[in-house]
Length: 452
Image (cartoon, rainbow, N blue to C red):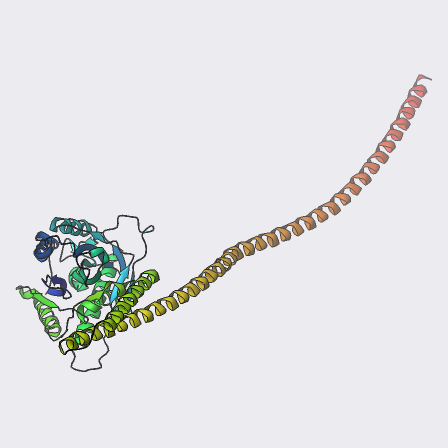
């Protein structure tokens, strides 16, 4: 089963609504064409017809593109080598909103820009051939478009640089999920088999989340953390958004099992009920800058002081002024409330900064300690190897010395034998010489006797 989440465009400032498309199998070329067409239609409303320029309004549109391949997150718009790219992490803020860090976001100005980055990322996706599809997607992909709108409000609307700003954020997630695979039909082996197992695991986790969200039980646990796919889609499925699922089935009889599973999948998703609200906050609520908060507190205190002085100066003679005085008192009360909120916010921010500084100091100490420990761990095996080498060399040296001592003893014995043999040879030579002398005397004597 292949799932395609598309976000429908909205003309108001509500959160975007993901549309989910389910099919038994899809061709990569058809899917890419369908996806481009869907995104082009969606972006037409706010990119092809941008609002007239007004100094009190600001708009920013950014896109990002990531894929989940074998449960690893890859940035499809980042051309840097994997070892040089920052790691992508999934995080959750204090309000339960899901966001990810380490992802490249690119600002766009037109639909052509959106489609350009979509095509660029699609070319970097992991694909492979199986028995059922020559160019099968081997990863889940999420193409995100973020629309940030800022509107100036308050008494200084004509001077936007001095006015307050209301920020409205909308997110559009276009999610293309790799199709569920039966290993018997795809005949996947090795790396393809591992990819298919991870794909099926992510889709199974998504099915469990849909079943939990569609359950009638009030306290049903929703297993968002079972996979990175469901974690990324947490706020799209059960959060502040609306979801549309489009189920595409195959008319072929041999795909009957997949068709039934697809319809059951869509039927469960149909029971999910979400309630979307406007993502609108004031600019000061999104900043951690203490100086900005202090400046705003000072401004509100000054306005409050002026209103109090105005209230003291103006007479309270007739009933016509009562209504105006009441509105002024209400305004003063509202300003006091805002000042108190900002004071609390500034205090919390200061405390949070102190905690962050302490944590940073602690982490630096831990990092230094870890570096020392890591160095010791790195050096320890080297020292052990050297110690083993030294022990082996010492053992060899002892054996060599013993062999040398033994050789010295043998040499002395051989030398003694040689000296003894030399003395024996000398004795024998002397004996031979004596015998020769005697022999010569005997020969001479015999010759003399013969002469007589």
